[in-house]
Structure formats: C-alpha cells, structure tokens
Image (tube, rainbow, N blue to C red; front, side, top):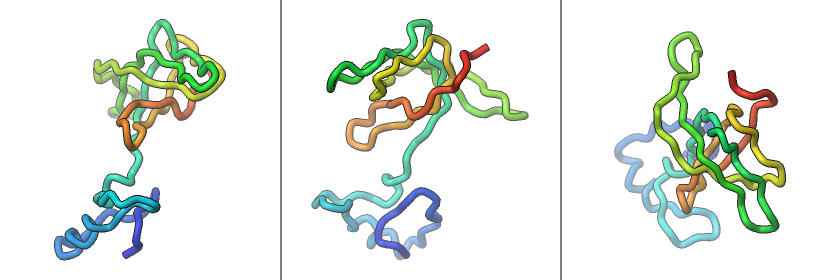
Length: 121
C-alpha cells in the first residue's frame, strides 16, 4: 500500500488497514486525513446565463453553475442543483458553457477546471 493516494490509485482498503490509513497525514501537515479525501471530486456543469467572471488580480471570479451527471447513452442530465463556482483564469467563462469543475480540498468550494470550446445547446 502506498503512503498517500494519487489519482488512479485503487481504493480497495481492507478493514484491517483502515486504522493505519486514517492516521496517515498529508505531506507537510500534522492533520490526519483519511486516504479517500485525497481523491478529487469532479463534476459536469453548465454555466448560468451570467457565465463565470474572470479573476481580477488575486480575486477569483465567480458565477452560478448547474451540476449535471452522465446519464443513459452518455447524455448529460441536469441535477437541478445550482452552486457558486470560482474561476482562477483571467478569462471569463461564457454563458451556458459546458464545464468540468472540481471541489477545492480545504474550503470545499467549486472551481472551474476546464471550459468547453463551444456554448451549450
């Protein structure tokens, strides 16, 4: 078993290993974190009518997005859940653009990872 979890690592952990895993710490930290918390949460999303504003200096841009999931036949289906999403890019996200978003580890905020090249239909 590796010391820390990385994307693509298998997550099958025997019950006897769980207590050992729980006590492992993040690199450069004294906070004990279960291995599963190292796995990034990624989501499909669609920007709202206002898009997601660009970063200005060190202030992140933000906007409302709707979360989606991949349904039958690979069709993106809305969850109906709207969340605030932050943007580190100096370029704004267009209204109605498809996105891949993720959750930031410490704050649990949603952040833009990548924007589709064309507007949603």
